[in-house]
Image (cartoon, rainbow, N blue to C red; front, side, top):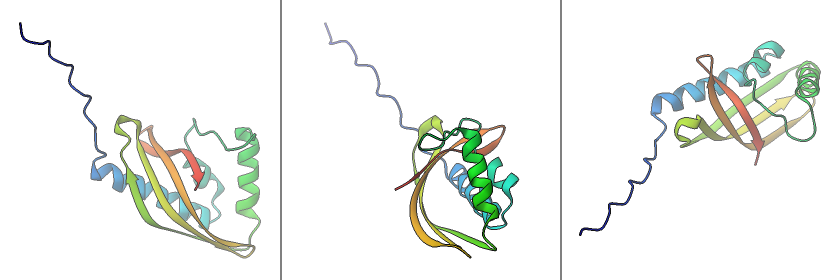
Length: 130
């Protein structure tokens, strides 16, 4: 008798380029809101499921972000070197270089974002400095 067939390996679902472009646009909108010190637009870029790093509650994190967006006289944020990592049906993971300048501080940080679709929009579900 022939050997039983092995189950097929699950297919790896590559992130379609359209999703990459939509995720890039969502992050560029987030950076634009940040640079404009538009707290509502900035916070709206985050998923309801976003969990802040550390021991902050979502409300404490939002209060901290509100203060940090409003304190400088000016802010510039530039995102570059986008790299998209396959996440299958879990959304899009993006690594990039963030260049931040303000009246108070300047720095360059490599970051990783997990974006998910929520109400038809790409939103940040996780954010990590690398």
